[in-house]
Length: 170
Image 1 (cartoon, rainbow, N blue to C red):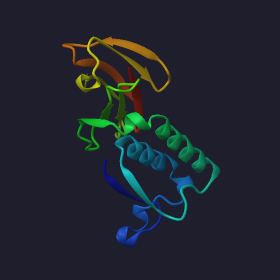
Image 2 (tube, rainbow, N blue to C red):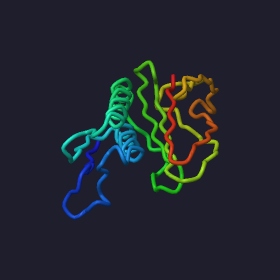
Image 3 (cartoon, one colour):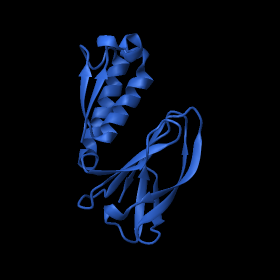
Image 4 (cartoon, rainbow, N blue to C red):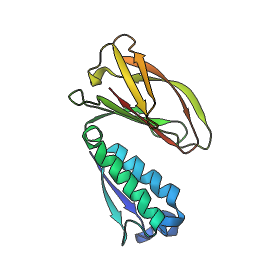
């Protein structure tokens, strides 16, 4: 767990470049912040008079708060950083809890402006899975992988620019 600060409005010396108000005009950026922060399991202080300023902003906030609440038990579990987030390649977190129905949740971000197509080695040792893992993607599509050396799978991914993709693992 950690703590983050998100200035929705002008705050001290950051100026307008450090804000995302009006939120409805920066919806993609605001949505990305919500996804990143909920995925990282951090506590957030949002600085501003309101969490949404228009119906479409409210829907984005509702969607991602509901998503977090639905998967809170896995988001609040241990997290494994798979790639250092430096903004020039994919980055991702694998949340693991071998005591739960979903043993893991993989969340991969593509912060670049290019499509990323790779085969990622995903370590599943801490999920408690031994022989196979079922991955369920954000569209509900299921795929079963046999674990290599009882600890990892190779996951082919194609990540659109500026996107986030996630998989439940059981």
